[in-house]
Length: 508
Ligand code: BLA
Image (cartoon, rainbow, N blue to C red; front, side, top):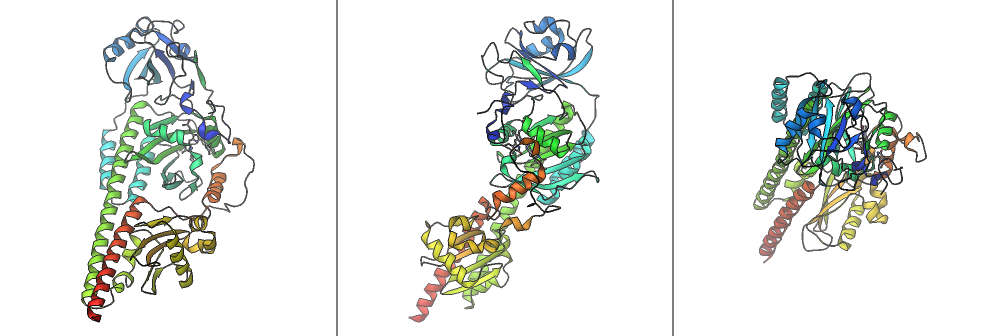
């Protein structure tokens, strides 16, 4: 894998971003051996930024910054592997200046102390309270994410705040946005999964908030580069001052962004999305406020989980009602399919499909946007050739069956449930190709740049890239969609079986 800063666009997804070996210059870092607290590594700006009276390497913390040593020592038995300890400490000759000392212990050992300028005390308790109330009261994902963007904008004051949401394949969408009016809107734009490498995503699951103070910074090296104790590069996964990937920085520069603050949204242990704040010029946010952002992001993520499970519970309830309507229809000796198709909202909305069709008893019934009858029979015949499951799904029918490529505009995505043991009998849902459903101010297909030089990375270009990646696919079917489709399929299969046995009885 390419070392930090050595990646190009051909291998940037493997860049070892946690081994940055450098920091951003607004703070300084020292690494201490334990338990004697001797400085074994330091950022090259430590002496000047902290106004130390000697070179820190090899010095005892007790002599270098006695007050910090006195505060850190009693906490050495704490578990500092996941959650850092934060101590506001005067540092420097004659205690020149207050710093936030952010202390944690990376897996290989050694104690990392990051020192950041300490801003004036702020009392955010009233705002936090109000924000939490708003988050908890949000009744839909839409209002929750819109509120989250406003809350973050008012607390951190960046020029643009976006809620960036991932789909099941890792592609991203700007789901909510608050911005200064003079900025171009990104709302609704979508970006390929490759814009945020897997290594970065794993890192963001552990380190929930990242600050980039000034895209034009000169990284400050850590010296010596490898730890004399472990012989390894420092694992900077949990460092606040970690220098960021030059490729990503180039991307931000191309976008005209000066500074970023990004919080992770973890739902059910998965990176659901990001709250990304962008500022046009440099911007620093002190630790205390970042901690508030982390807390609020956690509250937003918890609310997302609750709303998603509520939506799923609602879907299950509507399927139960649907089942009841079908059973009633049979007992009235009417046509049970009317329960499905007279008002097809349950059928379509519970799985977010644009169209649905039932192929059964030699008939085809449809709702919404579906291919023609003959094409539907072709789909049924193709499904017969596939491994039989309670639900079968594809987001790209064209990729799975070239012969059905013409159906892409209406039925890129197919979700199907067998409704009887007979061949060719299915309940089928369709989704259109998703490229059609997104817009960009201007023509996304117009080549903006070509070549694979990071200096040309831009949101517009990566939006166009996204189009190439997802061409011929629908929005992916989610686990929840599959679960709901399975329930509906099973209900319909039950009803068909009952109906057929009733017919057999009547015929006898
Ligand atoms: C990281 N790329 C990121 C992050 C975002 C984006 C949001 C996370 C930054 C953070 O959490 O601090 C992408 N940002 C966007 C997009 C928009 C935006 C799409 O504002 C649109 C409005 N980036 C590329 C390519 C590569 C790449 C092609 O576009 C190489 C594969 C790499 N992106 C890359 C790396 C990181 C990143 C290495 C990690 C940065 C770090 O944490 O050091």
